[in-house]
Amino acid sequence: MPGVPEVPGVPGVPAVPGVPGVEVQPVTIARSAAEALAAIRGDIGDCTRCKLHTLGRTQIVFGVGNPNADLMFVGEAPGADEDIQGVPFVGRAGQLLTKMIEAMGLSRDDVYIANVLKCRPPGNRNPEPDEIATCEPFLFRQLEAIQPKVVIALGAFAARTLLKTDAPISRLRGRVFDYRGGARLIPTFHPSFLLRSPGYKREAWEDLKTALSVLGRPVPGAPPAATE
Image (cartoon, rainbow, N blue to C red):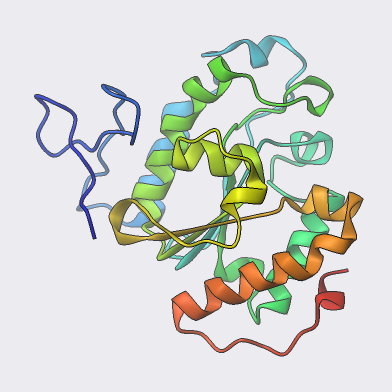
């Protein structure tokens, strides 16, 4: 499996694939994953690095779950419920994600959940390029700290950010990508899309089964209806 390229002139610091010169801050090896995540959260602080802090954000929504998880879910950005509670995926889409995780024979305590953006865009609009560029280094540091075996990218924005591609989610899902740190990345539909288009739940369930297979875990016989 190909290694992660290093930032030129800075040995040991991995580069963000496809973005020359953009660095991912190294995680101190002596730290536990939980300590590393706490340090990243501390570095974010009450972030004012992009315009979202002036556009109605209530609080930072960092991430939640098992810092030693083999499986990590990455979404797009917090919504209204997440902005209020400070926890990712707690609204209607989050409730569906919880059911999807449970259909895999897991719980939210077994996995780690985060978003590309740590602040809610106004009106739940799509993330803008400058916001992604500002916030994604923290996501890459989370990935480096947790070192999951499988990353499930929920929706187009997460998949495009992680893979550095403009391809639509319809072309990306159904595939397994080699990713940084020896992980495998599996794109699938965002739960909010599945709420609007439940006919795609069967395909999403196939993606979840693929993730279980990659992890070497048994695949429950849950039908797509289990994620309703």
